[in-house]
Each structure stands twice: as C-alpha cells, then as structure tokens.
Picture 1 (spheres, one colour):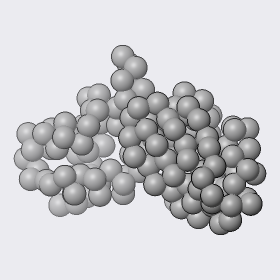
Picture 2 (cartoon, rainbow, N blue to C red):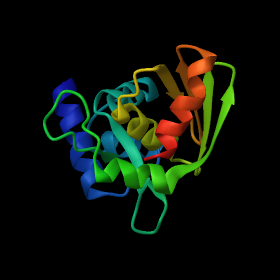
Picture 3 (cartoon, rainbow, N blue to C red):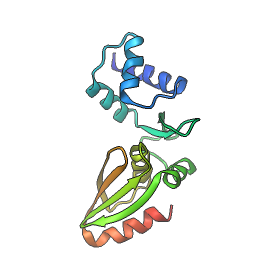
Length: 150
C-alpha cells in the first residue's frame, strides 16, 4: 500500500501544482487513499519532496532528481534553489539560523544537505527558517562561508 500511495504522490505532484500537505491529502483521498497528516508528512520526507517555485511563483511540491544515487549530488538545480530561496544566514552559538523565502525552507535545507558539509551534524526546516546544528561554535563561520559560496 505504501509503495502504491507514494507512486500516486509522485504522479499527483507532477500533474498538479500542489502547495500544501492538506491539498495533497485531499487529492490522495479523491484517489481512494485514506491518509493522515502524519502519513503524508512521512511520505514527503521519504520521497525527499521539496518545494520549488511553480509557474505563478508560488511554492509547490516537487521531487528532486538525485540521478539514481542514494544520496543527492549537488547540481545547478540546487544552486538555483539556494540563490532563489536564501534570505539570510546568522550564527547562534553552534547553530546556523537560515531565513528563507516563505515556503522554501525545505527546498533550501535539501540543497544545503546536498552540499555535504561535514561540519553540519543535522538540520531542521520549518516554513521559512532552517536551523543547522554544527559540531562546534568555532566551525560556524566556515560553514556560513561554504553556504554563501554556492
């Protein structure tokens, strides 16, 4: 059931400009899938979906193409996501606090993850803010510089 549902999600996001989890849930229900918000959230994470600018500039879900590799390979597509979505970078102790265009935090976080910056031990994305935990506070300026160079 999970594979079928996730396949349907891929189909739906390629067919429609789906902006929210609620809209995705409605479309899945219309297609005959009984889903909860937690299931949709898990599927989005497992499918590595991100938000990108749609035709009208509003954010929509999209699958990032990793070229068949188990881990993402940095590409021009990620560079564009960073350039279009990044608003500011700021240090808070051993954290990099990243502000993004509204709705773009997940996409920018995916782009940063794809950079493979070893000093980043983990990150959390909301709607317009990302927090990246860095090994030590002393390493944060270098991490910020690596992100800015992209």
